[in-house]
Length: 420
Ligand SMILES: *Cc1c(COP(=O)(O)O)cnc(C)c1O
Image 1: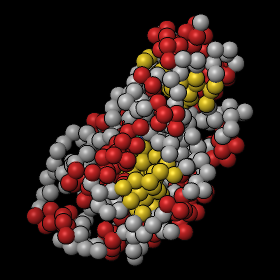
Image 2: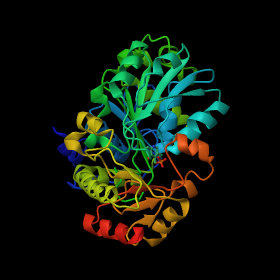
Image 3: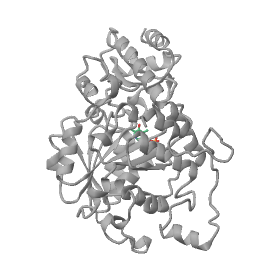
Image 4: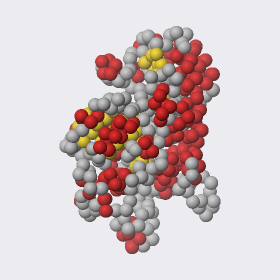
């Protein structure tokens, strides 16, 4: 089955009523019917719903579709993209360990990995994901994770995937790729040898800005990398919190199983069944929307590139962009998603453009069908010193745009007027 078909059909057997729409199982708990069945579920002798913090039939369908469209083995849906990022990391790293994170990631991922996790004893090193030349030197025996984004938010940077995967495999370290902006329609990380994917489903997968959610997906065969791997005792030694269970001895996708049984059980970042249903709706049309987001963003980027008041445009989909060869190499049909950045002369110019647009909303989100414009220096990155901003590729006049699904000519006209 191809991706478009999987997004519409995987995991759902129609119920007695033949309902075409996946039902929303809005329930907290499940009647086990018998003491034996209950005991078997808890002992993992049978798999099935126990309690909605751990699993839910609506969420199960979302998970199996996400796993399918990413060509993965199993998925865990979470309450937000952030909880997916957190769980993917702490499923592998504990106090005393370190992780290596790309220099170009979502701001919230930076605060989590560089600051908050440090308080829990997990230290973070930063590598240059563009070249990945410095990656190997950062690795030691306590390194548990290499984390990067396939098309980074907000820098729209595309990493050197082969180099990262080669170095990680040489040292038997798990790679985690945040695929939120590229989406599985443009890029399937697991088919490039990456081990684990995380998503903020709040963005393109939802598509309409109606719910927060996230997901973790593991590649087929990841168990083999974890079994007997000295870096990952959590999977190979008895889990005291689960009657001494050893994940490596179970016939299940163990990365996702442990994230569910240990992390979701204890941290409880569970998606609501209703939100899972919204993501199921979004996933159905994702492939159609990504084509349009990409085509619209290309037109907007081309317009901006030729405007005298625009100093620079970053959109790797443009033929003369320095990363364009990576778009051709990795992304399907040259699509490059809807996110782009451009720069005008000053802080004031940038703010005046935001105030003048009529169709673009001033919002800190991306991936909505409705176009969005943001000025990072006065909002998302206002707490960051200017020197650090520059390192992250953001200047006082930088503007971030998430191009939506309106008619591209209307979007260009709106920006033309706003630029004056
Ligand atoms: C938004 C975003 C996140 C965080 O997701 P939430 O759903 O907002 O918690 C993580 N990574 C990337 C790339 C994002 O764009």
